[in-house]
Amino acid sequence: MFFADRLDAADKLATALAAWKGSNPLILAIPRGAVPMGAALATALAGELDVVLVHKLGAPGNPEYAIGAIDESGWFFVADPNAADEAWLQRERAYRFEQLRRRRALYSPGRPPADPGGRIAIVVDDGLATGSTMLAALHAVRSRAPARLICAIPVAAQDSLKRVGRHADETVCLYAPRDFQAVGQFYARFDQVEDDEVIACLRRARPSSG
Image (cartoon, rainbow, N blue to C red; front, side, top):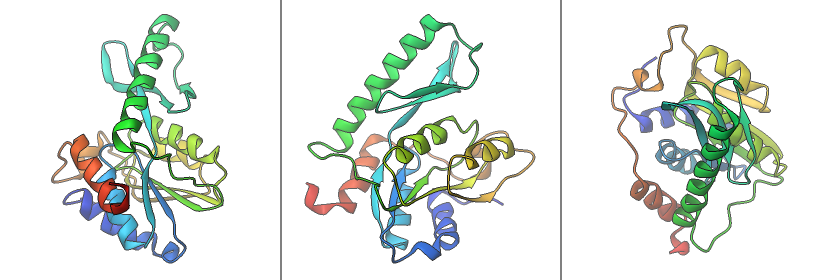
């Protein structure tokens, strides 16, 4: 399966998630790439859009490779404790936590995060590579006691999909190929999503928020 872009992937996910239309689901997108997708899903499912803020913990010398993740409460996990020493992990956690704090202030100034308690919560990302950020996102949302926690992704590495699936009540994945190398290989267009686009998506979803 191949997606033209993130909005094409969101359209296909919306079809797979159509059973939840009318239940006022809370669509929680992982910034930044998944936020335009989350906005499209919220429109298609007549739901509410917000972000769930998590950040991968990068490996020494390779910050793009996730060895774990952290959420905005400060909870974190490390998938491979041998990938970095404790001093590195402490610095990395502090740096990423501060990034999350600044990002919340930028995306949701003067407004608390949407409360998933008692609601259908759908956590969406544009794909799963290691799955670290999705695991942190699911943990963050689960701690707020949603009625049902759903993980929604267009494409995923098979091992990561199995690992993540244990932490959601339902997992919707459109494609889990054996030859997975990177999320972007399954998109014809996979542009960087910038903060301005994230802010615009959230403002359109909540015009009264200013």
